Each structure stands twice: as structure tokens, then as C-alpha cells.
Image (tube, rainbow, N blue to C red; front, side, top):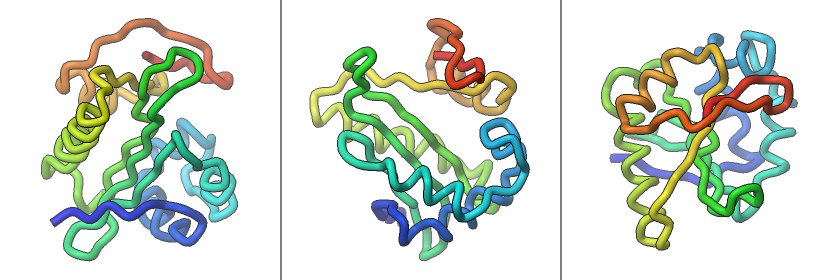
Length: 149
């Protein structure tokens, strides 16, 4: 059973537990393999509607982080901002299940389109999202990192 718990400063250590066993992404995004509590806390301070972030628990254990934005001011569309599955939960269909639940909730809110970005160099994410039916729209410079949209 999956439990979505809204993230915030009190969830910083839960997020670190999920993120630090994933040094590949941390290196791409943060420029270092291990994320520090201050890195997460800075991000979590910016989370407020229409941006939502959750720590997802499965059987009481931290299983994933998911974040979405209901209304991106740049294009007016909802965006999936972040999805990371804990290392112990990978290759079990959890990412697909979380994405599907998120997509279903957005459809209930009358949001038929969902966009996302992928950091250049994140081949596993590009492969996953391609299998999920996403296609590349454009490549942009975003905060000094190329991102697929």
C-alpha cells in the first residue's frame, strides 16, 4: 500500500534517505554524489501551491519522492518536476504506478496534459519516460543544464 505524505522541512531526512543512494542523479543535478541536509532544506522552503511534493511510503518505508506543479507560469500547463524511486524499490514498477496515480489525479482536476523535463545525461530517465509515451518537444538551457522537454 502506498501512502503519499506531503513533504516539507520535517521530511528532509526521509528525502535524503531516498536521494543519497542515487549518486548518479545527485551528480547531474547538484554536482556532487551526496546531498546534504541543507541542499534539501533549501528546495523544500520553496514548495508551496501550486507546487506539491510528496514522500511516498510503501509498507512504512520511504519508497519515492514525487513533485508536480499544477500551473507552470511559463506555459500554463502542469509539470512533473521530480520523481525518484528509492534504490531498494527500483525495477518493481513503482515509478510507473506513481506516475499513473499522479496523471489520474491531474485528469480529475481537468488537466489533460502533463509535461516534464529530463536533465541531459540522464539516460535512464529518458528511456523510462519514452517508454511511458512522452516524446521530446525541445531542448533548452535551464539553469546552465540542458533539459529535454
